Length: 276
Image 1 (tube, rainbow, N blue to C red):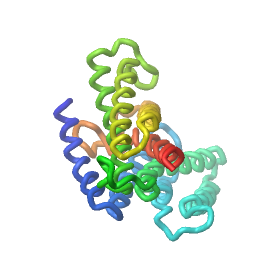
Image 2 (image 1 turned 60 degrees about the horizontal axis):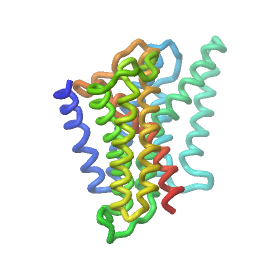
Image 3 (image 1 turned 45 degrees about the horizontal axis):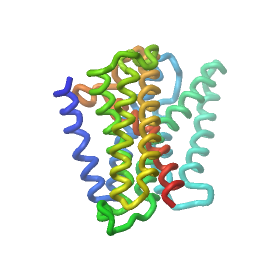
Image 4 (image 1 turned 135 degrees about the horizontal axis):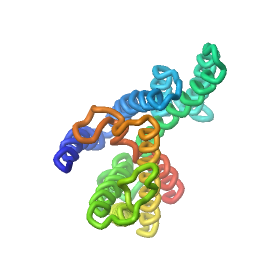
């Protein structure tokens, strides 16, 4: 299992680090590819779970939700406006279903799926809207475009890695077993501690208050765990062990970005609120 996880990391880590090194538009491109593949898998899971939807329309709308702010700025936000138009189109499509109950299910599932996977777009928003950092700080040379995304990435990775190893070594008490029987309270505690330590250290090296980094790490940990559990709930409803077979040993793209779907918007809100 550890060998397979290493292979998965070898596939995903280099493109992400290269994108962060070169900055925009490469960060946006990586996010777009991840959203596209993740949305395709998500709508397959919804179908397997018995929820009707409009997969092609939903995948397109997910990309719009994630990248809408890359369009020329407009009052109210480009992403919000385009998502609103997308909801109208999904509503029109839902009216074509002969059974109103199926139409309602298609409408709700499609809109939810697009919004759910589209949350990954907050990685790009964090890169573009992260607060300015002190160039003289330890990690100040990264610049805000890279630094805040790296805090998010390493915070989530620290949580996932520590939760896995601590849970495997010391786990005794189950955590929400009806959704994910393998997770334990000890694993959650270990992952949270790791995310807090890593985030606090990185934020300190960015020249910000350590206490604010502790809060950011805690927020990332809680959001990452929730994102992982929500995807587990969707897979369990669909009777699937993995979201796909894209990555050896770790299923599909959605299995790799599930934690980031919730951690990215939470981190974005915390960063723009606490560090400005």
